Length: 57
Length: 269
Image (tube, rainbow over all chains, first blue to last red; front, side):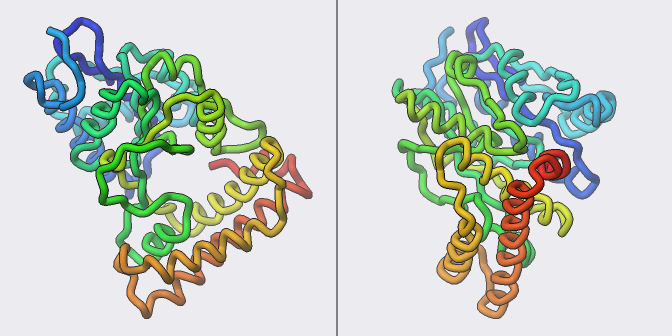
């Protein structure tokens, strides 16, 4: 997964190793994806959301 | 998403992921990459080859990031000395077995601090690299092992004076081994892997290491049990679970000494 700030170059690529999940672990994977999407959304939101990362416009 | 299409259906992965993700955030893209039989670490190296971001973050599908994980890892790179930064990966606790292993296994306990500091090791399920560093320093798996390439890479980064850090604000929870069979296999494989690692790095390959690790696990159970809400009456059972794990570890060590071919072929995790 790649997310871009305001420049054309993606800022970050998140490499997720997808394991052969069992039914019992599906809830964990779902929770991981939900939380990850929430954090990416916050990150790729308005400039300044993530302190410490300079974001070109 | 890197998945092994020799073991998992590509359609199944896509369907599962899209059922969990209602919408891809703006300015983001989701890609599925087939690993085609690659091992755990080879798939991570494939991820680096596919990555286009300035930073490459690694996560596994069975770990759950806490709020602040992404910010913690990416924010660390504001310090130019940081070239690689890992977070805090701890074992999720719920039942007696997971509480016991949270204290006895190799993962640290959940760290409540928010500290960025130098580090000498990391886990490949919660770590971020500047991309140029990730390209120059791929994971290299020691022949005959299943895990441990992150230990080797951490040693190489440290030896080369690279900026390896930990940011304890970037926390993820990891599940306990899934049942007794998985616990047995993880113990056997860790015993084998540590022996081969020690041999390769001149660490001595001591026969008594399993006993020392068990003693350390017992101490942690007694000393830190309250941190995982392990009751006093549960301590004997936790000590027994730790003993079982390190007995498996010792068996894996022994198997790698007397039947290395068998240990290499059969102890896969």
